[in-house]
Length: 239
Length: 260
Image 1 (cartoon, rainbow over the protein chains, first blue to last red):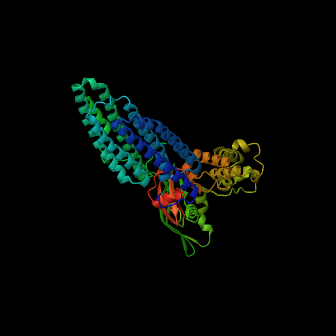
Image 2: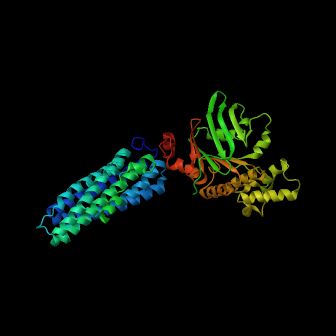
Image 3: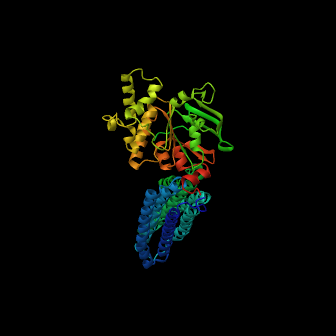
């Protein structure tokens, strides 16, 4: 297997390890950004929120570094089979992780726009939702690091609970807005936060699907995944 | 790239349970494979895996090795090529071969190409032979480079040109199958690219089987790839599948450069 069986050309293994290391670091930072953004939202900590926005630049820089290394490795090492699939997945995964980082930044930017004197009951729900999303992102990246297709499949199945949370928060916020027209602006921001979290869950699913492809060479079967998240969420919004 | 079905509906050659021995040593062990008429088939594998030995059994080139013995069945258009009634000279005209090192005859360019058709009685007169020689050289992509110096010695050409001359020589007797045993290993990248382009051009006119050490080359020129290891056929499939998602661990280790 890829992790135990080294290439004849050792420098190739060094390139691969460096690539994996960069992706792990990038994933860790995206996860951290989400955690900090949600904590800032929960506690109204503007400094922490500002730090999340600043740190996003590092995630972008890591994406550029991975892209460059992957292109260079493809050009110089002509990877084949699972090595080739890993290169392609690495390129796609970092663009997804970069999006996750952006959503975290977007949540952080909304902290300053919230009226901190009024607590809104949706926030604890959002915190619970974000805990699941952090786990999904973490497990999706772990499944990449460990070449674990089964863990990847479990991530896609668990994304269903994020969608359920989204639908529930959506209803809660709509009800809250009807009862408290003064807080429509805050509630609208929190709706976006919920939507961002829902999208992050989808992105974790995307990563898991790519991991499945890297490990098995096959696209994940439709039946292995949970319900298509976008359809579920979209239907609820219409209703 | 069009989707092709893995089953070869119209095989040009069929090998069934082929074993090849050199004296006591078994070089090929129970290999069965179909070679498609309109396809380029690549044989890959580490040195000594038997890919060249197997290739050479497809036109009985192993007959020239005293200790070599072939068992099993190899058919060309349903005809057993190891049957006593098979004319080996005719067989090698139908199943031509191009070798690793370009080996033009120490004769003129014209004679290099014209020799085969003449001894096989394909050209009753000079005018016919001229047509055959020109057509073979055109098909081999060499005509424009040599048309004004057909009388010069074939050995005076560059390595890449010599190899295309050898391909023209193989084509001239109108074969059905062309076997190539590492045809580019002695050539520079540009000459290699020209041979690869030529293989692409020739596909469909002849069934082509190529042995190559260069996996990128196998990936570039073939539609089917067979991976040999220790005298056995480990995996045979569509080239795209072999190089993106091989089924066998040994194939994967070899093509990804993990073969120790």
